[in-house]
Length: 127
Image (cartoon, rainbow, N blue to C red; front, side, top):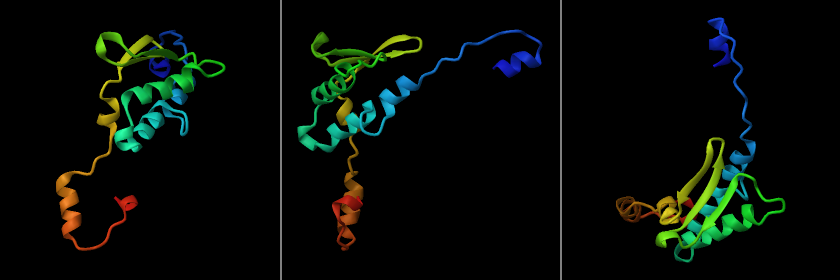
C-alpha cells in the first residue's frame, strides 16, 4: 500500500504490525492452537472440545511468560465453550463447542466402501 501511495505522491506512513506472536500461537507445530485441536481429534471418542480448551489454556494461558495474544477460556458461558484471541484489531471470542468434531478428518462412507470392495489390504495409516 505504501508503494501505491508513493506512486500518487501521497505521504502516508502505515504502521507495520508484527503478528509473529499470533501466528506462532495458532500455527506452531507442537504448541499451536490448530495442532492442539488436531491432537484432540486424533484421540477419537476420548477427544473433546473441553480437552482442547484445557490444552490451549495450559499451553498459552499458563505458560511462563503468558502468551499476550491469548485472552483466556470460558468453560460455562451460556452452556458453550469459548476461547479468546487478541488479534491486532482487538480481542475476538471463538466458540469452541463442536470445533474438534468439525475439524475431524473422517473418511467418507462411500470412499470407505469403495476401498473395502477393492479387495486389496490397506493399512490404516495409508488412509
